[in-house]
Length: 253
Length: 270
Image (cartoon, rainbow over all chains, first blue to last red; front, side, top):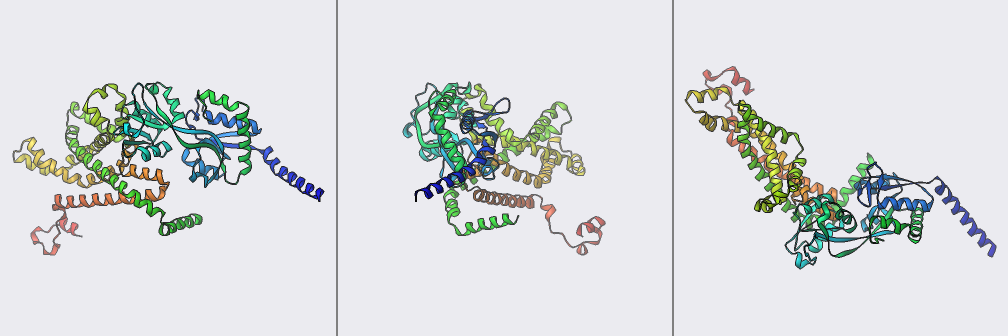
């Protein structure tokens, strides 16, 4: 009968509203970021987290009309901390990977990472395997750039893997490396500095289908959907483009 | 706690049943063995270089004139007083900041730009400071009577050092020197921070690819333990040979000539 169906559906609606409502009201969403991946997330001179990730997080929270608290957490412990409910989401330029998808849920991507070669300005450095043969290239260990370097070029070039991106930059500037492979956007930031001024991107970007998204707990579907809706909203109303333009002269979405 | 034990035993179970860790072990073991070889080279080369540098350092350190001892004193103070990691970074990342160094030809291209040689330089400098300090103590601990005996034979100072004091001091520092080499072996794991693929570097590479940190750190630990065992064995042999006088089997006291018996020997026999 028509009316009973309606009744059931409205009961369901009410019930779900009742379930969502306390969450939406109580809610302070605690968001973790790393604070060591400029310009996406870093600790500014006043000790506050800042950067692209943080601004996106704030824009999303505004759209969701939620109270957000942003905390910083070292990269190693960032997923365990989420699972231990010390915060509810991670907005820290985290790539979607199979391994991570087993333990956390990802929203829709909020930007795509590409890799790029960096070499000394003015040199004509071709980036195909033949021209790179025998050269020394660096990357950060345990990153997608490092894996790419080992897998694609490991047989022809000398691969040097660094603990931190900064150490790889140091060695590039010191002339120990002929070039390096890196995530393009943070490298863009380095190229703007004094030390990076003598270097530039070489060849084409390497598209490695690397999508960056917000991580939430596996069962936290509701929060995931709220983030997705808010993300769509800030892309549509231009907030996203505005934040993007502050950091990069090209779109990273 | 009980949960931990359960989790640990579950993990052990997967290790014995599942093929996964063993597959990865098989795949990465050759690289780890290459790493073992690099680690051994680092320890042996810097162990020898450090030892050679330590002797003049120690001799200057015990000199009476401040002009002679102040430099080695500061050197030893610095290298014993700062973390090895800092020293490696200073040699590797610090030196490369000086533009003029890069125009030195082969010194830059073949030595200072190579992580391998930078590691060896840093380790040699570090270990030489420790060994020099060991030597200083040992030279001062050479029994006075032996030095006096040498003097009474009319040996020159140089000869005294060459034939009596330094060889005796070497015997005295041997056990502590073996210890220092073992510390060096473990310290050499820091070479992985300057991109060198020593045992630690190879292990971290394997972990970055497989995410099996527990499994590979355990394997690396076992390999380091093996290397340590070899070093301990080597130094034990060296000690038995060099300090043979201390290891000669003792004759039971009652078989000894009655005139040779004294309280000292009997105490030792007990």
